[in-house]
Image (cartoon, rainbow, N blue to C red; front, side, top):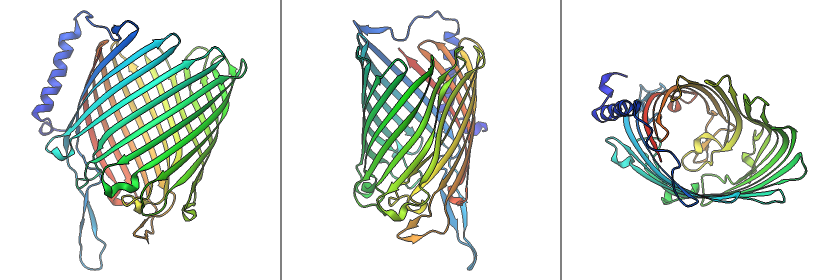
Length: 423
């Protein structure tokens, strides 16, 4: 990225970060996080400011170049570089009630794109969580998150989508014996879009899950899990995609005695069943999730995550061309090293392979190709915790998406600078 990309606003923002580095490098600690409270009530405000540059803002924009009669048209990709600024203030309240706790939070996010005022968005999120511990070994956790959002599209011709969503969850756990414990959870989710043209995307989703765990070592558990999720879409989409998903799995939650290796492994079968039986093709899957952290030393940490799962596309008027469901397999490897007490760097790499289980259709016209995508993403991050309440970060990423549909392939490079204040 040459100097022509460093616009004055970004230069000002970057220089501001350097000035903050210089001013506070040798200053004495004057503030502490979690130091604001009224009695038992803790108040935690924070502010995050991010300046972001990408050389391919709408990575799927393209035009079709018409050739001579009898020849295939050529798809020409359009690369548009843009600057965006995100300002995110938040305020959280935490009230301990003995062993129990109640937390409330509010986050506001203002996202603006330089020279694209139509893609300036505002998002509000209100959340509440509570945890209750009972002497009989029964524990209860409840959470509710309401989001009033605006989301930009994937193409320059898209419009901002205004929506409201609400997610409620209740989870109860109980210690059956000294080694056996069980957990049961319920979650209800709904999303509503304001534009009538997108009513098929209005969705109601409910999920129940249960697990039985056995403690085989002081900090290691093995168990079985079951979950059932029901999705109902409102309105009339291109095809009826109401469906039920059922998962059966085995899970291991581990932490070795010396604390170096910790994480969770899960594997099992996933079955996705559509109400429209004509869509039930290749919808049985062996899936897995893995999240592992290895502390090589006090300075170096290695993380690994992976997953294989399937999901419904919805087949609304927007994505009917890609089929009813897709399977995604992904792996992410990261290495974090602390150079000093306050400066750390991270290198990570991600590989994602997605294939659509069936061919799509537009206006009931079949497409004779099933879409597959291979995404490779690598990046480096440098973080400096100037003070407990003040942090600064620089992140650079490279992403390459190779698809068998040329209009879905893209390459983009991103750079982000972030300042974080916590009080």
